[in-house]
Length: 218
Ligand SMILES: Cc1cc2nc3c(=O)[nH]c(=O)nc-3n(C[C@H](O)[C@H](O)[C@H](O)COP(=O)(O)O)c2cc1C
Image 1: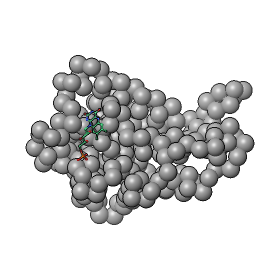
Image 2: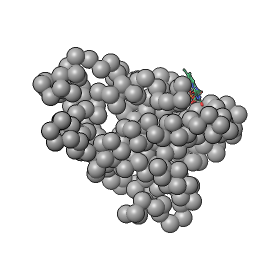
Image 3: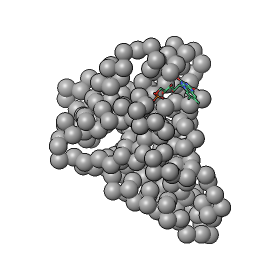
């Protein structure tokens, strides 16, 4: 099995990158034969600006730009897509949002035209979301940020394309909490990535994933 782990943070020494590394260690710990690729969008200088060529793709009148075809190909090679990102303004960073805007294009992620309606094209894809935030759980609860983010990202983006959000996890209060707990949680997500039963429930012995599965119920 193969995972594409997309990371959107400019600093390699950031907590976000440490979380991604811990998650990939979990993948290897579960099964050394499983593989992963890290898509470090900042290091790779991915251009997140939705441009005129992207618009032509959206309107089904132009070819898919080369950089976008390459991103789609690496998702096509993966059994699981993992997004690891710092939460900025109660959402994902602009770099990652631009990656979604451009890569999850009409014709590849979904097919929409007014005559036939919507065809979801990513039904085969399992998605794992790990958002890392400085705010605490109470703040997220009080203001409805958990639901807002899940509605917009889990449902609005991935469900729209038919992809299954298996993990939807927030690692919060990063400046206050013991980082080891979050690193352990990321390791557990990686270890359970390909260890899900067909009904989406966590594999045996993975209590962390049971919680994750419950959180992704939307
Ligand atoms: C521009 C910006 C916006 C942020 N907005 C939020 C936010 O809306 N909610 C939150 O919980 N944390 C927010 N934070 C805090 C970051 O999510 C947090 O510092 C980061 O995830 C810590 O990990 P890092 O070392 O990988 O940056 C923000 C940070 C920055 C730089």
